[in-house]
Image 1: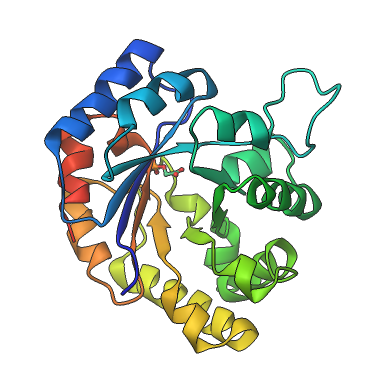
Image 2 (image 1 turned 60 degrees about the vertical axis):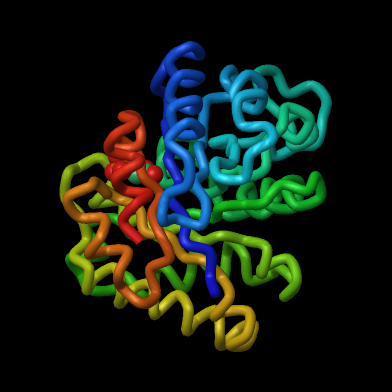
Length: 250
Ligand code: PGA
């Protein structure tokens, strides 16, 4: 009943031509066992890849970021309306690299979510704890706070449009993956928190993705956990074969 999703976060990798080739490869590969694939690509690639992805319903287009203002004198920023016109359907908000390297705090994330949703973009809201929190065993409390600060001001209708991506920071780009049990425990915790706040119907319908060193060797086991509805994949999404293998892990 929930969408099973393989999302690839290319980060600041690939040239436009490499990105177009990768997107074409995914389209040509056809349907996988995932309900949908999403590619989160650099701004410069969006319009061209949107053309590649038009008139098919297997691979969807996401931006990795958007401006926290609607328009105006914000040099270097890209607005929700610009993304929408470029053919974007999804946008990442709250990725740990944005939170830590670009000091995006909860008030910025809330503005971005509002602007994205107003423009008709679907938000993939990312959250997750750093290593010291995991070592102290307080990850549930930290993730709960991220939910409260980031999305619990939203109406039930708006929250139900989100995809959540749980990405423990200690597992991102480190080769260190959460065990299937650690992923399941946190996903179940997030779903129970959503249920407490918004009720079981909404909580049970929302896709919660796992991110952090997902690769073909571990995707099947992680995705088979009952509360894991797919993955947000960085490094392993840059190679056609490995991303297709991950998208066929459901
Ligand atoms: P990784 O990145 O798969 O390279 O660990 C995941 C992410 O940051 O979305």
